Length: 281
Image 1 (spheres, rainbow, N blue to C red):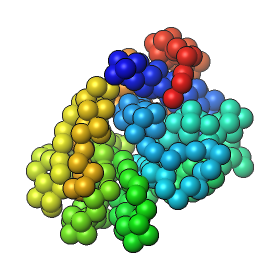
Image 2: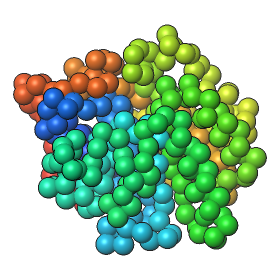
Image 3: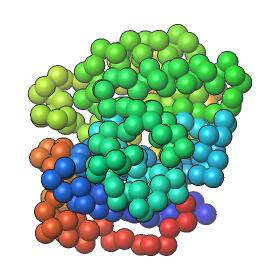
């Protein structure tokens, strides 16, 4: 059964990557943030395919649902793709990405009926939103979990550290943060622009439960989320990832932070994904 679960998630992730590439290509000259969407693809796949409870496209505002906040909102291609695979978005809506009058813009704009919990993209805001949701759930006795994805470059923002200090003091047991540590940001490496070394020690010093894993190893991601002590938070996962993961010419190539795809590049990327359409998540 565990192997079947892994196969389902791996297939979900390939489908998600396909949708990322396809939306980016159809956006044309409007371009898209591809690299950072691909780096979170496996984490997002585990969350949406197996870990997040209460996601129901027929009842999108279900109070007990787990909540997802993509603080690094420019990676929205991964978010939109997951929502499509979970039937919150139709093929027709997906094809409107970055086009006039679309609900799917280059950064998420809140539309809870479509599964988009918050408008994000002003970096450094998502963790504070997560803290607010966590507090609200506690006060209203809602038994759910709040998942927030930050970028490692986003950790240059002072607001991240204010929130990091606040969450343990508020004893937020249902708050789970994932840092997408792909070692790049818009204009270069995180090391060269503002070194965020020793992230684990920094967050531990504020009182977080910190773990660090390969952010593309489905087994390790599942083991982490299955092993969390959900009565003792907040929890932080540092996911060591590869920007542009899954597409050979994009991996660790910061040119693909935000760039249009040519037809030949699109075709090469699709060939590399080896899509299996037997999707059951």
